[in-house]
Length: 267
Image (cartoon, rainbow, N blue to C red; front, side, top):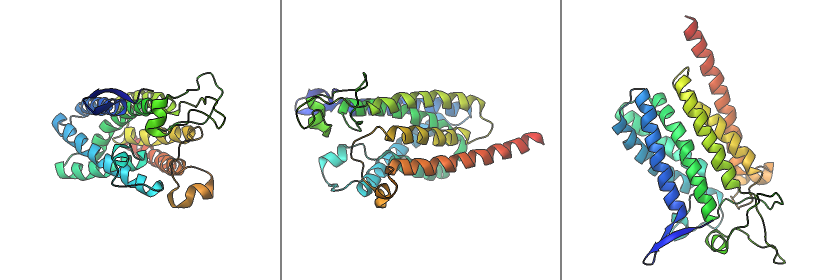
């Protein structure tokens, strides 16, 4: 809940940016270690990682422009915002697919190396959201409800008082997702050591993250837009609708790939 760590002259060093940078660096390190297990060149993994980050940033901004109203594409706030995660995931995946073909690397092995790092990056990214005050939750009377600071309110608009001036305590949804993704990171690293086919770790991520996101969305209360009117139609958020589609597709693909792996092992 400290949006700004310090200033260098008039230039602010934001907590969100620092934590995001730490998360990205550690995610790349984790990906390189896992890639080495599959005999992939580490230097290529770092190249892929940097371009995937750029693709993710572009994708997150594009989906943000479609889902949120009154977005000023040329404002400083738009450039500083984290964007929409699923857009970032798709943008990063497109960049990854293109570069894997360019470098002539095995797609599924590379994807398996990156998937746990993505989860680790999300752990740090959501810690950054908590420090900034964005992605906040609904009002709660639970003992771990969080009252954000005035600085957080000025930075992101997170509500801190009700209409009569009483302090509001909100679900720390940022921390819910952060620690859930740390657990997902551990599960995926464990799965990487015991995977039965290349691609299993990525598919595992595409099952676990949508489950986490779908559940946490019930506790979030920040404005997140309405893609093509689907939220108004279904009562679910845009992220929940995407989560359902991704999770069902990933489960079906996992079942198919496991069946293929069993047939191969039986020969």
